[in-house]
Length: 146
Image (cartoon, rainbow, N blue to C red; front, side, top):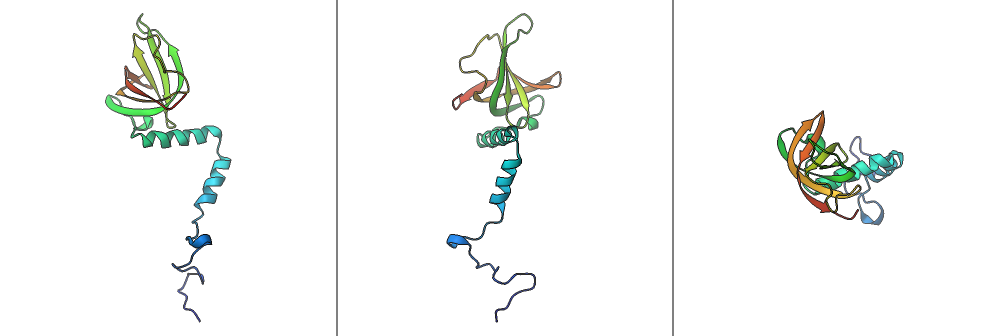
């Protein structure tokens, strides 16, 4: 008769193999599947944006502190022409799955490639105006297709 240690079911030792000679799954696949089925599309898109932003070495927008330089990445939700102090200013709302930051290019009416739905990476000084995070005249890179 085999020796079985207390609390370990028979046959569940470290040498046990599942199908195809692989160790049995820890239940992560089923858990992930069920979570994806129960999540809304917006939640799934936010998770994907967070994963993509992290892959690019960007700081999550929620972690961006005021008066500090950061690199952020995400998708442009809106792009509007909003005059500031009588001069034109192109304003875009960048969403990374955690929060939103406004990117403002002063003196610009249009920038090629800055369109809603476009993925973008931006770097600059973060400030807060009216409770919203803002980055003025950021250095940017367009990412992926729109």
